[in-house]
Image (cartoon, rainbow, N blue to C red):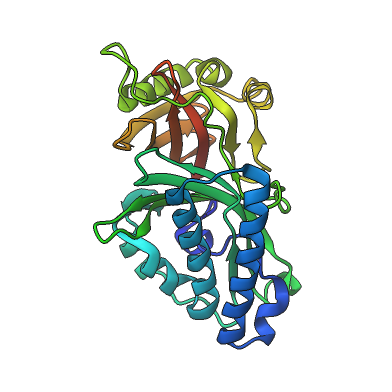
Length: 319
């Protein structure tokens, strides 16, 4: 849910289901509006995407409750409440404990609204790991005459020992204007999803991530070709999301090769059909890269056992 920025900037983004009504409302009325809107959006979700697995519905509800809580107690307190104890964050050029990084930030100024909503995502068949993405909006009355800053977030959620879902990784990008999503909630395509039929030749997720990183040193389009899931999304700083293989490959062909890309972590759901990786990257000349930071990739395993990318996010860091 967070953009290309320092951590404090990143916490200011998320898109809107509430709008400018918040300042005029007491917290109880805010929650009432959130609940009413959530019901309406749930109806749209059912209409637009058919059956949604129970675990995915629970994740969506958790994200919406998270967003509503941020409007009542502020983004910092709500992030501490909804992030898992082992959640990872990227700040000041380093990966570390997200909760420690969040806690080190000053409290948000009065009137600051961080507003977001899940609009797209999926959950593993085993129901304990999934992801959500959607538009975000950050509003501060004293900044730019109250005009919003827009972004797109991606959050990875994991079921905890007590059965609740919490965020284990959360990244995002700034966008030049509000990003468009289909009405309600759309579940990512799962028609060709892996269901346990594979053999010892199937690569582990860490290997797939490493192979992609190696290929990125020769060129971006070639590295991603054949490794994008249906409806794959590229989230890049200061751009609207690039959606679909054709659009992604066309844009990637115009981009420079990576100087380096190093996989740091990989986790796969028990069902083996969904997972995520993160690591560090540098783009451009090795001695003076044009951009460097951290990446998040959400992967899905297809029926043939191969891993393909559902969402790929770059979060630049200041050097």
